[in-house]
Image (cartoon, rainbow, N blue to C red; front, side):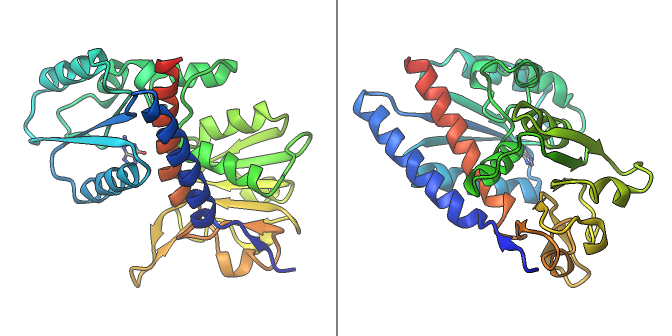
Length: 283
Ligand code: GUN
């Protein structure tokens, strides 16, 4: 069997078009959806990520205000900036780019963001809202994975989903989102004994560990949906996910590629969250 591809680029394009339309409607009511992006230091990967976020925003009519701070910025000064952004009615979403410099406590910084503006969905209040099924902001990567499942009309009810990875921003929220759709969910991780015995039972596998070739064809039930959140580099410097794509695509029913899968969806969902923050503030 050759799996059907879930094209993250094409789906993200559709989502951006929808965001553009809804942004135009808000602007017609005099509201300019605005994202504040806070970058501390000069981490090269972070510089690239924030550039993408600024470009994605301006393409869809959102305003992204990028503020850069020196690496030696005091934590208290960053907290004061966040408090000012919390109080600014013209700012709907706040994103503090991670990682922060080592002298800062990332948890404390994230907790300073108002949950109403937490478009990354990293605040404890956002995680708690997801856990108990209340409105809040969902982290962008697992939210993007759910949109990918929705795009193929996949019903999760009664299905077995195996999530590999237990991070606070992907694995754990992913499990909650799948559970809310009435899937049976198993969370595995790097210490799981006989991972294949778990994944072979799965109708849906989400791989989010950060290890190339973690999931191979022999670990996948024929016809399963395979979502690859991994972002790794091969020895030759080529981008690859956690899934042995060439092998697994011969067994799976659906599969997401890397690049062009979950990555663009993560970026698109940040726009959706920012727009929703603006819409909620206007409601
Ligand atoms: N660093 C890498 N990915 C992310 C992300 O999604 N949000 C933030 N704030 N920082 C990141």
